[in-house]
Image 1 (cartoon, helix red, strand yellow):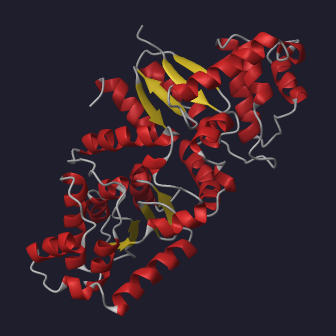
Image 2 (cartoon, chains in turn purple, yellow):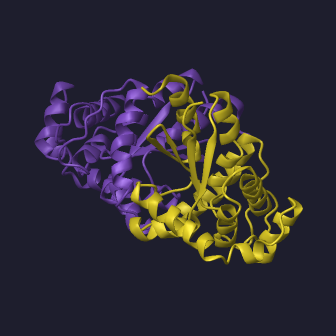
Image 3 (cartoon, chains in turn cyan, yellow):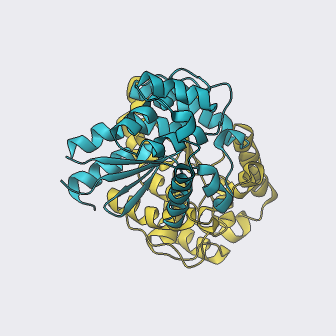
Length: 196
Length: 196
């Protein structure tokens, strides 16, 4: 099997959520795995000088509308949580504490669905811990406080920025970078053709 | 015939150029006209706090690559001019001096092709005047200095911003706003279905 597709996202990213509902199936059609990499987009914003979309004049109103419209097009439930943008620190650390494999992906999907499918607040540690318990995972509260867990998220975030990753979602396919859920059609084509 | 599609762009926008090569044909498939509206994106950036893409850390390198890749996918020639971003003031004023109809569109296409198809500098008035002469249009140097010409561009730019238009290209289809050349597939679908 060829190299996995790298999928970078921030838990507070609506377009990251939309992409998360598509990328595994898309990859599977090309017999690829997907390596999920939650990171802290705020650290990248410090480099690029960006602010969260909804805090930007004009752009904010457009994107609030576009989140819904894009979700409807995909047939994916979408409700913006009251507290938005939020800080996905606990969920991101939990992902790496779980090792980044299938269980971690399940939790990530569960967090995304709670946040943007059901408009729930997933910032508090107990909220993420409850989602983990639904998947049979205990001890998240302690796990995400481990120094190695915290360090892992820091390293992933720093490396992502060093590799030029500045947005969410962001995909890397055999060294080729694609930014935005609206580039999934290009990712699909790149996988089918090997590039153009 | 139903309402025309509004197509807003800045002449210095590579994605605006790419969209300009697609939008008329796309609209024609749905029996629609396209009303082209060059405006000064810099005025919108003052409101949104954005800077030109290539001046932004991390984002600049990605987009320089993505311009080329997106152009190749469309089969459209693309070379970034040495002076970029540039100021499309003369071309924008010329468009409105020509009244915004077919001749103005021809000139706009010619300017875009010179700038991004051939990497020529289209900022100087004589450069735009030469392109106009190739279309049989004389007197551009004087026409773009007319107070009513200057005022028209000012009004279009102010109205665009007042309507929430903050990027290039930007489309409005029956009141529905779409930002980015990568939303053309959504524009196409919206026209086909009347929305979703």
